[in-house]
Every structure is written in structure tokens, then in C-alpha cells.
Image (cartoon, rainbow, N blue to C red; front, side, top):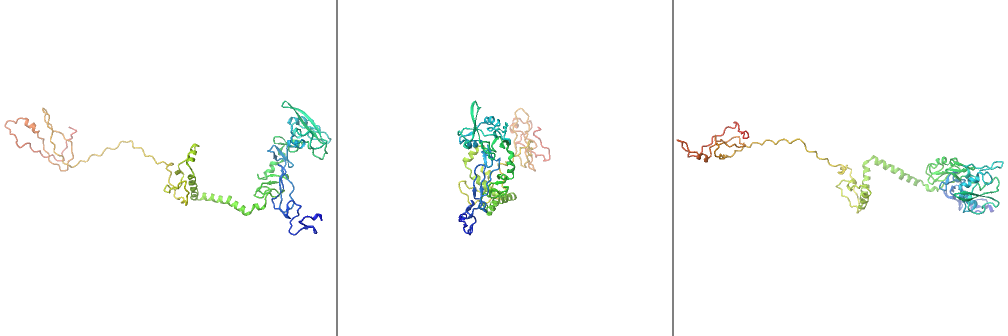
Length: 468
């Protein structure tokens, strides 16, 4: 009856009660029901351990797995081995207490090269000890300083104290030897996976390159979304599916179970994510490239809103930073006849962007310059046309005394086609005629000067005043 005290079991039949899915002895069984997948049933015990999760189909937690041997730990100062981050300081604290630390390298070199039970790098079948080489001295017996007087493990442990000279001072290095059987690992030997040099770790009491663990080769099959466990299977991050972490999934591994519940990957949510993250952006990109006008209509409000949000303080800050801010009109895509709403007011019912091409930017396309004036001389003025107007009669000026009378020359004046008759000769000035005495037998003409004879016909040669 003691075997069937579980309330999920029927004591008389030793079977599950009706409606029960599991017995309460399993970690992944709760109230006679299986816990859902993704529930953690065993947490990580350290930096080099991995968690395990319920599978949703078994009441028991999956077997324990941990990080692959050789995975870096302690900020890549050491390496994992059998689920533990191997470190000399940690090992010394396990032996000598919390205040113990690893001894300087000179202690390892002076002790482990002796090849005895206090310092060696292994033991042969005949019982003799192997002295450590210069490259393997940090993989022999652990050498510590500080801590308790006696080791925490074993009451019959032997202690070796070694004094060395380091930095002009004497140091005390302490080692120990436990009388244990051959089937028990010696806790005073440097742990496997302990860093012994740059990118090297102790393996079989030899300082070897970490590439011997094959960590990088195993990580490559996890596609950058997981690490390898102790079974060399990928333990994927949440959101990626095992076994190779290539596709989206629940995380975890085939050994430790899914790392999240199946409900977290609802097909509807996944479909919406795919639609909004991949399908819709691709469709918008295709439309923008295929139809430039639609792209212009989408981008115009963005440019306007960006310019409306600019303030004088932002303009001055941009100028101080060396950024040349163009005037607002350079960035507007709307024609100048559309009024702009002030920045401090809220814009409602913004009109659609025009579809006709915009006028050229006056700042980018300056007007063409006027051509230089011609260098050749201007043509002469056309000759003046002769006016058909009768010149008024002009009296000649009186001649100077003592000089013979000369006919004054007149400039050529335009005349009408029908010219009035002109006198054939010009009579002398009345005063000049009166000054001369009349000749004998001549009679003065009381009637005054004679009438002018008619002018010569228009076909006669005209006298040029410039030739005279």
C-alpha cells in the first residue's frame, strides 16, 4: 500500500486514477497533470551548465547536459570541463579555504619538475612519477598560497611547503598529497580544462591547444544561434529550433527539451510577423520603384513635416555645426501658389501633392546671362529726306567796305517739286548803291531794285557750298 500512496494512483489497482495523466513522483507532473513544454525542471548549476525543460509528454526531467568541454568561461580566462569552469583560484579555495589563491608560476616550475609525489605530471604503471616539462608545469600538482593551515579534504593529507624567491621577496608555496585509491581522481592535481597559456588548456596533464576540443567545428553547425552541449548537439537560443538552429522555433535542444512553451509560437502571430516584417515592406518597395508618382506623393508629406518642425534654434545650431540649411522653399515639393500653414498650427486636410512636374529651382538653375554687345561699329544714319518746302527769301548781308561784292552762299535747303522762280542776280544793297555817284547820262531808277529773274529749272546743277 505504501507504493500507492500517491493521490494520482488507485491503491487497489496501482494504476492512475481516472483523469490523471501522471503520478506526482515526476518533476514534470503537477496535480496529476503533465506540465507544459518549456517549463524548466532543472536550472543551470554554473556557468558551464545548461538548463533542462519539461517536454510536455513525460513526467520526468530530461537527463542532465552541460556545455561542451573547451567552451570559454570566466570572460575567456579559462575553459569548461565536465560542466565546471576550471580555475586554479577556485581549486585552491576548495583545498585551503576561501582566502587561498594560486601560487606564482615560479612555484609550479620549481616543484613540478622534480618528478616525485609532491610535484609531477603523471605516474607510470610501475609507480614512478613523470616530471613535468617546461611547457606543462602548470598542468601538474596544484600549488597554492594563503588559506587554512591544513587542507579541507582528508585528515591524513601530506603537506609540502616550498620557499621560493620572487620579486626580491620570499614566497611560501604549499602543495598536498592525498592517499587515495587509483580509482579516485586526485583533487591536488590541476583540473582538466584549466588555462595553462594563451588559448591553451590542461588535458591529461599536458598543456594543449583548445582546438583539440573541437568547439569551433561544433558551433558552425549551430548557425550562430546556439552552443554545443556535452552530447555535441546544438542548444539553440529561444526563437530558434533544434537540431541546427536554422529555422524559427522554441529553442533548447533535442537532449534538454524545448526552452519555451509551444503557445509562444502561435501560427497567427507568426503569420502576422511575416506579413508585416517581410511581405508588406517588399510590396511597398516594389510600388515605390514601379510607380514614381506614388513614391513622390508618399515622400512629399514627410519633407513638409520635417521642414515644419524646424525652429530658429535648430537652424542656428545647424549653422554652428557647419551644416548648411537651405531655405524652406528649396525643400518644398508643392507649387508656390499653395499657401503654407504656419508651423505652430495643426494642419488638417492637407491637399494632395500635384502630379504635374515642378518648376525648376531658381537657386539651382540661374537665369542665362545676356550676350555681350557687338564690337563692330554701328551702321551710319540714313540720309535725310529732302522736304518739299519753299525756302523763305533771305536778303544778303552787306559787303564789307573796300571789298568787291560777293554773292553769299546759302546752304542747300529742301525744295518742293515745283520751285518758285528766283532772281538771276542779287541786287546790291541799297546803301551800297547809294554810295556810288550815278554815271553821267544815267538816270536813277526811282522804282527801286529790279525784280529777281526766275530760277533755273530743277534739272540744272546745284551749287555745292562746300566746294566754294
